[in-house]
Amino acid sequence: MSAEKQREIASKGGRAAHEKGTAHEWTADEARNAGRKGGQVSRGGRVRLIIPTGDPVGVAVPANDGANAGDRLAADRVE
Image 1: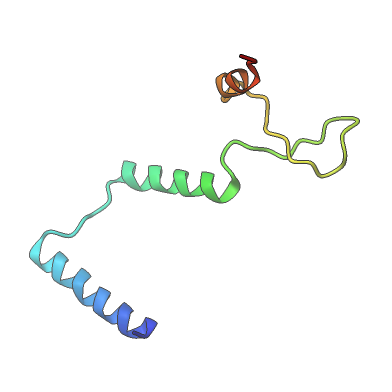
Image 2 (image 1 turned 180 degrees about the vertical axis):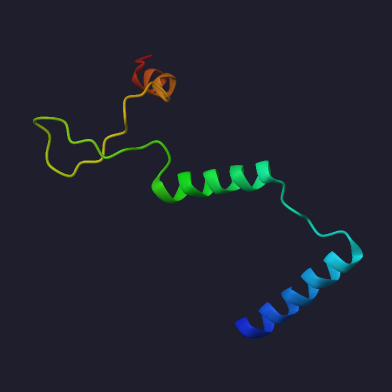
């Protein structure tokens, strides 16, 4: 099925749902949270590019903001 035909079918479904009153309408909070989540995914979330002194240039290192400290500690344990 062509993209144009698929778009046409989806558009009809969206119009029908609005006419019936069953279409989802975003609240301001839902829209804000969805935008924030999308931004985190597209930017890589909390990971920042930090180039510590002495390390090779261009190495991506997670920011040491304590957000994942528990994960790092668990991974560092030697059993």
